[in-house]
Image 1 (cartoon, rainbow, N blue to C red):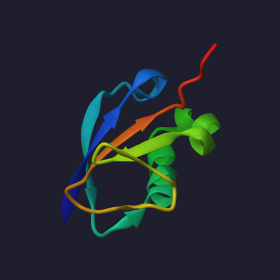
Image 2 (image 1 turned 60 degrees about the vertical axis):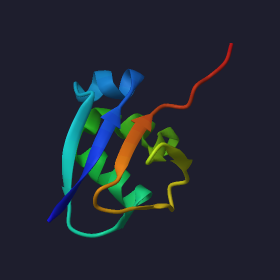
Image 3 (image 1 turned 45 degrees about the horizontal axis):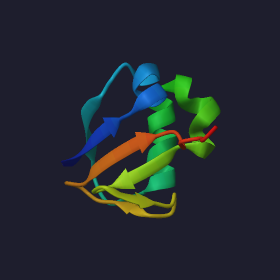
Image 4 (image 1 turned 120 degrees about the horizontal axis):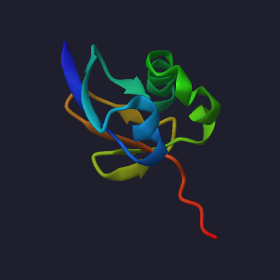
Length: 82
């Protein structure tokens, strides 16, 4: 089994109490499927699951993008202006 590196930012980092961790993944998976697994691991993220933004290897991606072993995945909330 291979892994991905996951980076958490802002409120996501506060809720997970993590800034970075390694996740084991058996095969390529969609961002939306992985986000479901993320919420299973960190239920406090459930209210914001639909609006979470993801970057794979430092590129913003849609929830239908694919995460593959070895990728770096960053998770954050959308930035709002004011």
